Image (cartoon, rainbow, N blue to C red; front, side, top):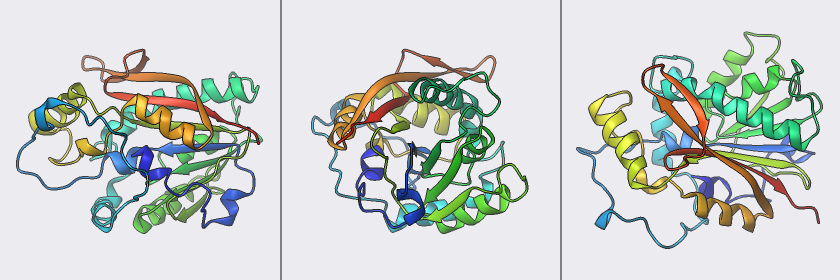
Length: 269
């Protein structure tokens, strides 16, 4: 997923984003929840991950865009297909708030600690992350390859004066300014991730439609570090997300075997 989103770094089609984005947030939601119809979960061949880093020359295909267009109306249904993202959002925001406040020397106790920051939310979907970032004071631009997602995001943002200034564009990539920061949220390509996100979440508990996740699109932390390094981004911090089935809440952890999030800074030139 991250490899796909990084394919067009430096080849941006949206002038508003390239002006001076302090932060590029690669939101894995759209790519990681893309789904291809399958009859039953099948583990990777020989139960092993590929040894080679996935190529970064490709991007989202028409099938993936069409699939997300079909479920775009459910982005703000907290009990719908995107329920896991809604549940995880507070924990993602806690990580983002902590790392960005340290990097940009902001007070995390302020109600609007992101004042003065420009954030590009890549793969923003219906805007479920863009909106809280805007409420924290950031100037936010959300981008997504699915036009219907962008329409839903715009309509929802306009319902609240604190989010109505968010700019949404239908495109696929953005550029981190030198000295800025990048945050990537994604899923590890591990057997444990296959078991929990596909076998358990989709087939046993049926939290998500069957075929929601595509295991081959997941990316290991090691691969992510190398991919970001190619874009002159050094990963400074990484944390995993752990779900507590008793409370229904997510928390940050050192366990990055399934869901994880990484923070990196863009090198100056």
